[in-house]
Length: 351
Ligand SMILES: [Fe+2]
Image (cartoon, rainbow, N blue to C red; front, side, top):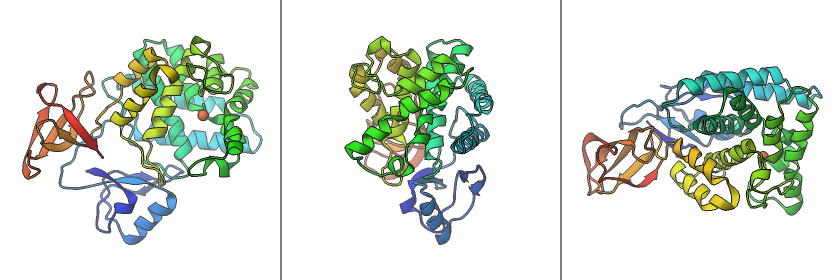
């Protein structure tokens, strides 16, 4: 199994993981052979990449939440937003139910490193992003030893961090490439808009609201809307800020290929003390699979292969199925656990 870009798909290839439509139904199931018109449909839907079968073998991609819970959460968000567009208030109870389910599943899977492998279309990009930011923030909160009550507020805020975008014109939000100054100034308003929306809901938790208001603030004061600095920014918002940027730069989109987790972590560390809380960042990094299952890697002895499992305590030391020798020739496959072979390391990676 491997993940490839939609433009590289060819008729005859076999789908290895189900692809869901925006309303949560299976569009193409695993095992389905691709036909020309399926590929066209995937392109129309804006699905940038899919998993296909190949002769590299099959392996489970470990996920912190079940596909069913992810699909349900996306549906809940979609319904709430549609209702709000019609003038109704946010359906807080449904969103809270989703949040509780996610928290329970993540707490049950605490040995799994995060590798977010969801496939998103144009339309559910935003909702998929919200769910990912919720999961990433939650895992960080767990790693920091938070109480369940705090985890609930953090995850709820992270899930709804961009709720203010319902007041921003779609054509600006979906515009590929650079925004004009005017458009940028409009987008910036979503943080305050979101805060205003949830402030009107009497039982909306205070710190969840702060996540919505402050998730674009930066430690050095360069963020928005209030240009807060350091600990003026609520801890929960400092967590969601990292999760938000991480998911945005790793997401695969039609017009922009996502960068790999290991590169994304380098970017976050590079922005480090200017933008982010370094203590939070170190907790965050510990929980990300730097080389997720299914990614291709080259090892320091020149051999290469595919990651088949990860070590929770050592994200940089996965288990690799070696397929090519040091000269790039196909060899009899064998597995190396980089935890047990400390002299070897990953030197480069790709999907
Ligand atoms: Fe945002």
